[in-house]
Length: 113
Length: 113
Image 1 (cartoon, rainbow over the protein chains, first blue to last red):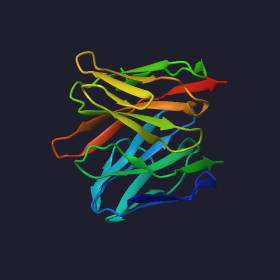
Image 2 (cartoon, rainbow over the protein chains, first blue to last red):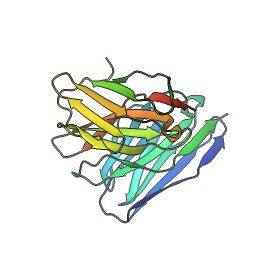
Image 3 (cartoon, rainbow over the protein chains, first blue to last red):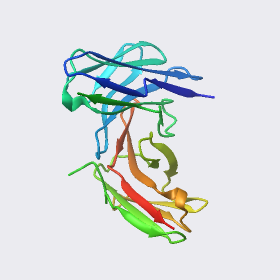
Image 4 (cartoon, rainbow over the protein chains, first blue to last red):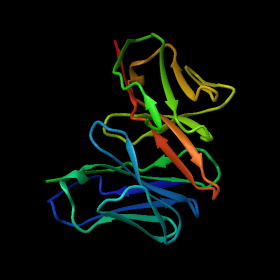
């Protein structure tokens, strides 16, 4: 069966520090991968999606970036965090074309202080 | 206009009652529709897909009206465990086969004993 792993679960980082969040999927190949952010009391905002290794599409301009170095690995990064980067970061995957919705990882709760 | 709009609630409903949520979407080319459930500080989880003919899963019934661009979720005989935020989700598949889910901000439901 397919599983998605996301870590760390909780992170407190100072303003200006770098960020690296990792997400891996098991039990499938060539998934579509997504990074979402959910700010407190707000909806999910799509940040990046990837349909293959090295292929990244950005939905909103910001100081975050994403990379997909391997088929089932998706990384969210920042060189310098801002206070506004605080939020609940969720990785998700789907099998392309199956239209079954997304499966989310358990999320990383990031607080920038 | 938001791509997906929901009444944020909160809905406070006595146990055993029936409750209905509504959602509208703006893109008439949207191709598939879902309801997700999100518990406090957890990741969203797929509750059910929404089909054109309407569909039922136990106490849950989903309806889609493409002409009005309207989706609904009905919960019968509500349980305490139904307390959560319910997210209306719309999927737009591009010409390249890329899926992109757009989430509503959610409707918060609390079932009262």
